[in-house]
Each structure stands twice: as structure tokens, then as C-alpha cells.
Image (cartoon, rainbow, N blue to C red):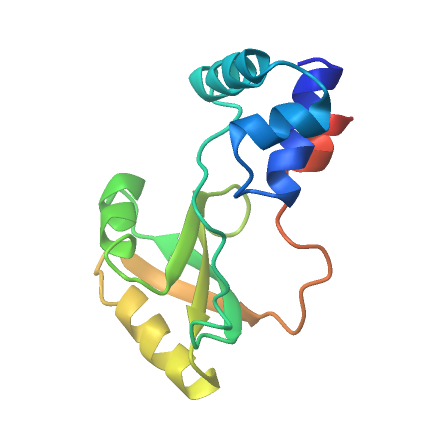
Amino acid sequence: MDDLDGRLLELFAHEPRIGVLEASRQLGVARGTVQARLDKLLATGVITGFGPELSTEALGYPVTAFLTLEIRQGAGHDTVARHLERIPEVLEVFTITGSGDMWARVVARSNADLQRVIDRVLADEAIVRSSTVIALATQVPYRVLPLALS
């Protein structure tokens, strides 16, 4: 990663619908250079996609919660992960250290609907216990760009 890669990432992060030609104009480099840099960043996995960022709130899911899941010994994380990925309200899941085994970020339509989501998560017999924390506000949204620019 060099300065041009950083400027390219910053430009596409702020204007994801910009075309390669316009990006080359704004960056003051040849179109082919922009395309080659984008291809390299995609091939190395730095850029993982160009899809739209979606708002869970605008989609009707204003409640965000974090579930710490404890898994029955010997059940395996992969089995539980397959169960969780079938639940649309489960946004991401991590295997963790500490008092729990897995951590899931989920969304719901309301606090009452959150109970439905939790019940669906707990429907897998490999999950023996869950503790839930409800998010009140997002102070720093998920971001990676500052790492690339540092």
C-alpha cells in the first residue's frame, strides 16, 4: 500500500459509485493506473466488495443487541455457525475467548421482537446459554479505512 492506494481507497469509500474514469481524473493519474490498482487491491483481498452499505434501522430493525453464547462441550462452533447464518437477524458471529464461546451481533424490530430473535438463536440444542446486551447508540461505526490510511 502506498499513498496512491490510500487515496484511491478513500475516494471509493466516500464515493462508492464513482467510475474508474472519474476516479482517474480526481486523482490525477491514468485510467489504466486506477484500474490496475483496483485490480491489485481486489486480488490481494484489501477490497472485499463494492456492494451498497445497508442501514438496519432503515430496513425496520432499529434494535441492535450482542449475544454471548455458551456452547455445549463437543458440539462444535461450525455446527452452531451454520444454524446462526440461517437467521437473517444475525449480522455477524465470532468465536471468542472469555466467559462465552461465541459472540453474535443481532438486530430486531423492537425489544419485544428481540425476544423472538433470541428464541430462534437458542433453538439450537448445542447452545446452552445466552446473555444479551442491548446497544443504546453507535458511538463509532464499523470502519476499516483509518487502518489503510495510517
